[in-house]
Length: 343
Image (cartoon, rainbow, N blue to C red; front, side, top):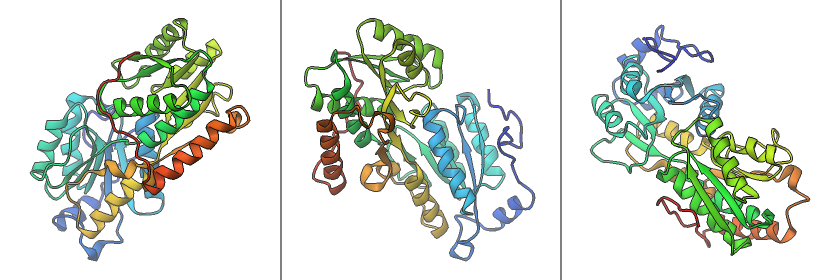
């Protein structure tokens, strides 16, 4: 259940919902903010189904917090909101006068769009597996299309594995997970053409113990490097003395001898575009996934840090060459949303 089980919502241990006066002001101005109010902070709320510490959501929270600090938005959020509560929480935020709603609706796709239709004056920027629908013009989907960075991290992984056996632990086999796994595997093949992969999904976005046990099984089966799409995998790698590749966030500071590299997601370009559109009164249904591409600044390969002197020079050169080609458009990482299989 959500930590905010009754109105007002957004009253988590980290944020306080400021409703006094703002709801009246927002209701007085119909539709999206006009140019007259372009400099006013946009009343923004986020709805998360997991804790804000979770990798994927933490990147949205980081970008939103930065936007709040520079005065672009007033930002509050609810975390650990169950799918059963999601529609209700969306409606409560809309009724409270929020003009930009952010969240992840992978488990409530239809319900979320129903809410959007009921509040046409509100802009919805939601993590989703579906494409934009002109029938819901105020609902724009996004996703972490960080396949570029995942591909580069795979090149590094291929250069660091000795056995050529790599374990991969994901949350669910949905497009946003699948495409990153495929990109990583393609990168590995650049450095280790004969590499094989053990692929497993734990059926949860946040279950570190289960992810850890799954990784243990893969290590016991011969993997000497694991792809840590979920929290818990790097812990298993550390305990077993093998290497890991991170996803979405950089955890090398916590695992200096374990995490070689990480594919980082930067949500700032996605959110900044939405903010600009809301301020201009031009927010519409469009695919915000493109703002996660490397050429848009939406992803990057984390610095090698403690592994700078351990990754072979040939791999680092290949990474640099491929990164340049990705940014100038001469090379495109394949987007494959199909469920990956062990090989």
